[in-house]
Amino acid sequence: MTAPLPINQLQALQFDDLHMTIILGLPALLLLWLGTALYQISQEKYTFAHGVCAGLSLLLTTINIVTVLPLTDTILRVGGADVFHLIHIGLGVFGYLAGIGAFLTGISGIRTKIPGLTAAVCWTIVFVMGYIQYIA
Image (tube, rainbow, N blue to C red; front, side, top):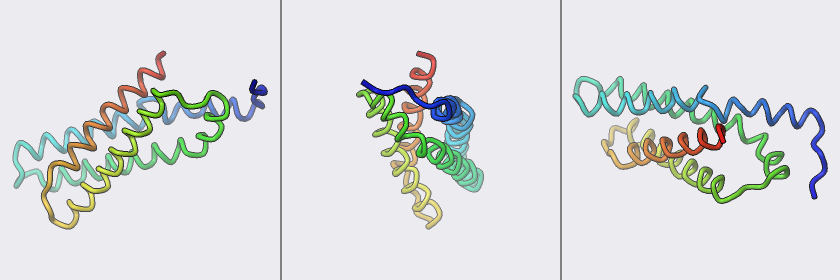
């Protein structure tokens, strides 16, 4: 049996809405898919725009992850992590690592689609899972 949370921890859980809602996740996804679509339309014309959009998406995702890390211990002590959360976390980490890989290969001038598309698909699934969890 878990003890009731002090007020400040309850407020912290409510503040976690920054991570759980569309404030950071949706713009990150839209930027990533916009950059990907532009790059598919014309690689020569939109390479820079693709890099800016994907880079901003990675930055927003990094901020999103950083906002949830301090609260992870509190959340795990209160309710634990079920399979849904573990899948959310696992896909998020996998997508984030793929995004970093895509970013590093992109700034080095190597053109590869697999890491970027992997990040986009993983982040889309994680976003939908997070939104389902939020409205449930």
